[in-house]
Length: 314
Image (tube, rainbow, N blue to C red; front, side, top):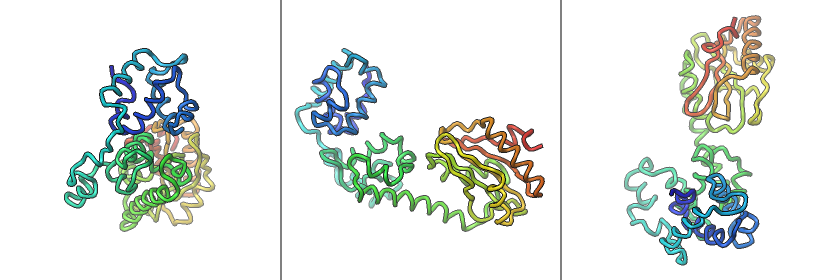
């Protein structure tokens, strides 16, 4: 039987072992009780959530099979001994810094790159285990990059100095992407070209943003995409006045509307179709046509309302 915390015992042996040793001693472990037993509260909350989601912790406590299985796992790995950190088990040439010097940064995985920035682990958690935990907890680099500085500072084991360094690294990556784009005026003539151009920035957003892209007579982007409005995960309001003020100020010949759905599903809502009709109508009155309205989800998925809902542009 596969157990929900088997990957944690492999990737975060110190944290998972500490948690399980305390949790197996309780009939119905809770984050509060585990914190009293010396388990960091963020670890207790995370691991209890995983056990509950897998059905291994139920309303009245442990499932018999899960409790027996974890006890056997701890016995096999020698739970009374402090787990050896992964970095100590690696040969010199396999360690992240030495591997980067020998083979370049492209040879490193996400966890290894993050470990180079972190430099040290947290408590009895090695730096590689710490880096892997951050990636697992936040669904990879994209999820981690979406955390603002305040959220990073609250992350267990980081603290103000390392949280600031991580936030600075993510901001540098975003600025590099923007700077690279400024070298040319890209032509955005198809929805696919627009999505390819913007995807790197849109994927980092944890909230919804509505953008105006001002285009010249040849379909080239004038300057940077302009943010019309920002919202939370439930949406944003974008009126024609604010949208076309930005397009006119840029000297646009035509324009594109783009917004993201943080849920990952790009399917348009009734409100999305309504604002498209309003923008298209105002564009005709101003002789500044709206070429398309794109909704971007995750994994490169998008919807072109020009294609899916052509009636909005009539």
